[in-house]
Length: 149
Image (cartoon, rainbow, N blue to C red):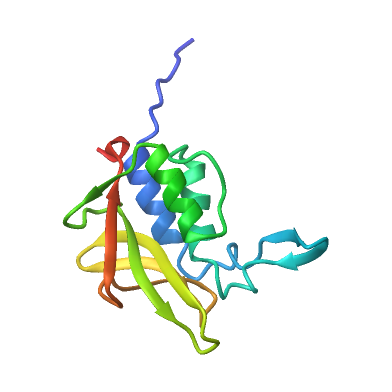
């Protein structure tokens, strides 16, 4: 009997899942108890960028937990071996500087750099991940993990 040897190509699979997430509704809702009441803390996809990124990173064991905030995701990334880099590399994480929305709330944004000047992150209007230029707003930081080599 012949046995096969299979080795998952981690970086290629990681990039494929990121690209295949475009338009997915999977990341719209994350429920939690807030002051004892059930709430969708992603507001039906309005605030889903960190949930989207942390879900994929967790699936590849690149972080330890699922997160609903950019700060929580970045903190976990740093403790999991992600480090700052100066220029984007395909598969790195992009963290954009905070902006203020129409409700006066300040939000950071997080997504994936996919190469060619493009990124994939959650679009609060479409309420799902989309492809866009990575310079949609001021970039705060790029993060890289050597497991992606």
